[in-house]
Length: 383
Image (cartoon, rainbow, N blue to C red; front, side, top):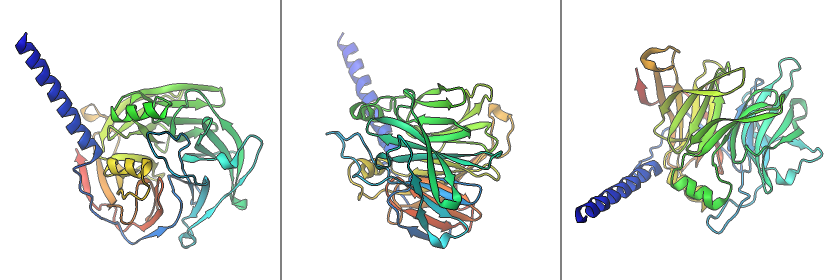
């Protein structure tokens, strides 16, 4: 009996020690962050730039002013700020950003607007562009739908979409008119339980698909650790989901008949990544990441002045084939940008267009860079 008790105690201590050590690794406690730029960069002063989409007319739309709406005694949240959608024109980068006018409609509360993830759908028949925006409200979560009026530099509110399955939305990816995927980065609703879910690394979060044409919403992926950014291949055949806490990218094959997802590959990113931008020409993925997630957590939840680093990765999937049991057996990850926070804090999205890059942050500023080389630093190469 004594030896059994000793054995159980040793195993318990070993398990706790292993869990703590792995947690420290995941938090990035031991990681050193180096400064690296792909070319000349300059800062654009904004009040957060959490997500960015690149439109066919070379306009980039940016969500700004993200704030938390569920304060508690456990965590000190981001101070109040105004939710905005900003415009950056890659044809006229010297003009920096301008704010789009949000045209009111019945049921849309401009003061409550709290934009997070973005996506758009271009209707080829009518030429209309619809913007889908994740918004966090005091009375729940929603996806706001706008029509982008380019000539008026405005967004016309169309409608608000809510559903019980869209309970903790982070990012959205449109694949049709009123058809989109949403990542729920948590399973629980309360601030306390979300904290528990995060620190115990529970695999309970989900990905949801909403079909506005059929008025259906369904779970398409579950048991995930903090799914964050979501994007698709240019032909919408594959769906990419960043699983933040696991530091992985899940690649799913999409069933176009019912929009369900089949997991076909998992890629280790060796970094806590946020949003994904899929390059329209070629399909390369651009990921903005957090080198030390412990600093990012403190930056968001405790002190926005706490310095946290930034990182941008470019993922090239290579040619699709079925060797070695993988759909994309040949891929490489290239680090394009890295900063310890002295220039840019908390990178959340990176958009590349014709040799230039725009990097957004959750709560900090915006960065515009000339990209002189796309082969800055090879991190991973699997053949």
